[in-house]
Image (cartoon, rainbow, N blue to C red; front, side, top):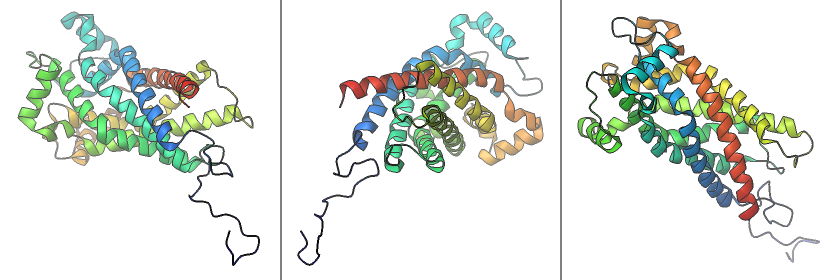
Length: 319
């Protein structure tokens, strides 16, 4: 008690967060606990999801690498699938899968772990986010995953798929391929297109988490404890995925070109964008939109459904 103040209250030994009750005890799991749960649940989710959706990612990347003129190889999605299966068999559609499996686990772990961490810092007393904070948390999660996981993973993946387009592919496997890339381009060779990837992933997750959190709050209404069925979560995820595709496919095209085997012909991200605009026209920025749309909607729907299921399980057994 303060002897110099009448009716003074005991001094709280720490600063309370918005989600803490009046006694200073955490009403929800701590920031560290939620972040760790998000990392583990996100990692498991990433591994499962990529095994389901990879063929659409493969086709999307092939179409984005396809340029106009004599070097153009595919007339569309069906033609890409047909030629790939004819040349390399059905498993040709899974070329580069190992790269994404190795990368999707840490990518998803960083994404959801970061989002849970940022959400814990910015949430209100009901552990919910306002409109601006939804965007900021999603943006933070996207930037974090771009730096720590997505850029090296995507660079290697695109180079693997690009290598298959040549008459004599050089990469015999993940370790062999990465070894050649590092030997020829150095460690920086797996960080090509970093700025484009940060912009892409930042805007991606800002849009997705904003739409997802908004729709969840809308569904719950005044009942904050209302349970959202998994199929509804999947539907929300598909909508969030579609919104992100239409919002940032141009960035995805530039990122893909910057990470391809012919990236050396571009000085930087801006130069790549300008050359695409001048040489191929504005519609080139939306190459691969249809396969990307189908992949991303399925991807985000599955991801949020699996992630929510694991978080529910963890919250029951991991207090």
